[in-house]
Length: 231
Ligand code: CA
Image (tube, rainbow, N blue to C red; front, top):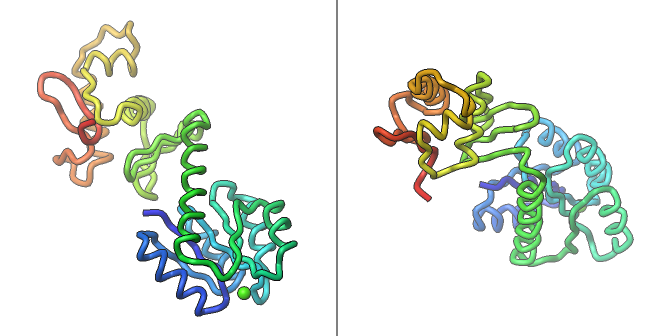
């Protein structure tokens, strides 16, 4: 579920947005001040979109925008502006906002803007040489070599890392033991093929909710293994 943070001091507008986004299937977080927004951004790592009002008491929307962009380039940010703030749109975009929307707006228009940004972010992630592989609640970062199940990090050995990488790149595909050996241990490996099973058992203990279940990793008897549902 995509997560949206709404930063808006006017309760009526905030409630209106919250209701409509929830109805559209988003998880929604709320902040009524810039200070509150920055605190949420620090603590919540998996925010997809921020809807950011410019005129806020205390820290205004621009400052929240600048602060957020200092260490988060991935969150999509849509500025909420009043009609009288024409000039501010330009400022917002130059500070790193992805889009702006002028109040009052319809829920449909807002959701269309959000979807457009989510699509763009998704495309960038796919095209940007696949530094992060994902599958449902799992995320494998190929640069930092870290693996996460939801937000919980799972420690992997080198071999386990290569196995997970192979499976996430071949989601839904049955891989034979020989294919796994070639890809993870190298085609010059002449040891016992059972090494695959031993390691797969360990991987399964780490990824499955219950080590005897096969929610994520399926054994295909006499052949090999498969990550995820059929393709
Ligand atoms: Ca306001």
